[in-house]
Image 1 (tube, rainbow, N blue to C red):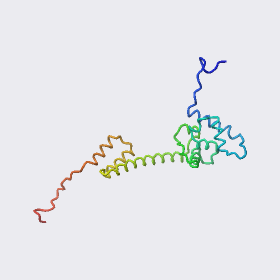
Image 2 (cartoon, rainbow, N blue to C red; image 1 turned 120 degrees about the vertical axis):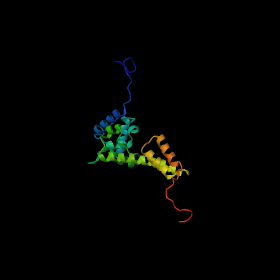
Image 3 (tube, rainbow, N blue to C red; image 1 turned 180 degrees about the vertical axis):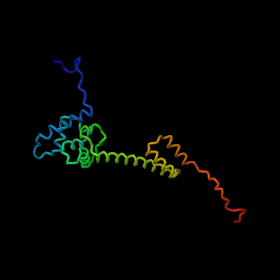
Image 4 (cartoon, rainbow, N blue to C red; image 1 turned 90 degrees about the vertical axis):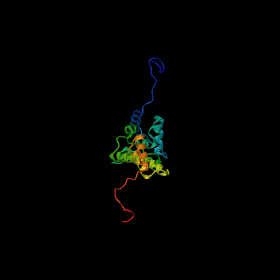
Length: 190
């Protein structure tokens, strides 16, 4: 029998996030429900401790909310991400992102509500970032509102810096007044 570390043996590598998610999901769905909980013990804390004992990096990889959502049975019409979002709100943690492949492997496919919630939160984050740019430009004394609005839309549409800079410089350039072509008075009389 050969021993690890000798020629021909490779060291065990830690599992990747997707492999870890599959292992934790399999463990939580097959072994956790059948075990008894001691009287007076918190079932959530017990479940997290048992998962942490078997998979030490699971909590830092996925978060407590996702692991607790995995250990609970979702109600009808509720996906794992819906349950994780509610659990995260109760724990005052950020909600898990349904776009993460590792969390999808752990919690399953997100429902349409969760996908829409993710798109909405991404849009709100982009608008907030653009508003911060606009407010920063409005706070400068020599910048007109048009230049600030250009900065807002440039940030929101993720335009390159050169294009935003040229548009803002054009907005800051003083405008020349062109004659209207009308004669308002002749010789001082009307």
